[in-house]
Image 1 (tube, rainbow, N blue to C red):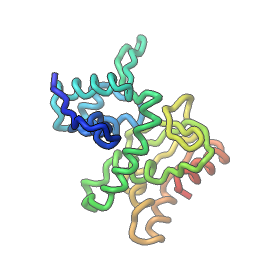
Image 2: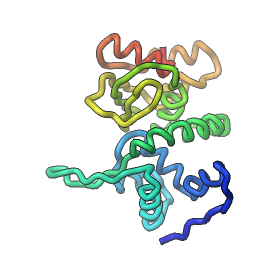
Image 3: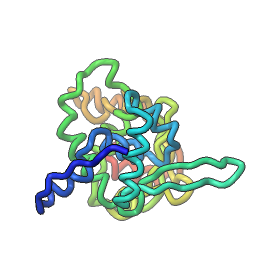
Length: 211
């Protein structure tokens, strides 16, 4: 098992980095923002991470209380990892802040048009914490599903069947947020589809600034 390093400073930034500053840790948490994931899912979505290192990081995050492991019953019979209640409270603002910081560092080419980047740019960075919205949602981006909930200004785990399902390409979600012209952003938003009750769709679109 890898030895964790500590800054040994009684400072909130140093103590936060003691938990989050190890390589791959924030990327694992980033993946779990999209809903529960199997170990094999995390391996696939984090190319380059060693098997033993992923196991170590998951164990550490369980110990800190940011994630939890669930054994699903038959016929599924599999282990999934998800953010804990504390994780949902603490992790999204951190990921959102870092994504905002790094957004203009991303090279604007085809390699950037991934489902994950679509979720980060189109959904996470558009979330308005002032909303009083409550509900569960599913976003299908180029065939990859992201599931989450909202509860009065906070992102949470999806607790019920999705009230709204969003279907979009990664490119359209990215362009809806950061295309260079208003016309391009509007055209991208027009291609995003929403399925659900009309009022639920309207309030969800407003909360994520996809109107």
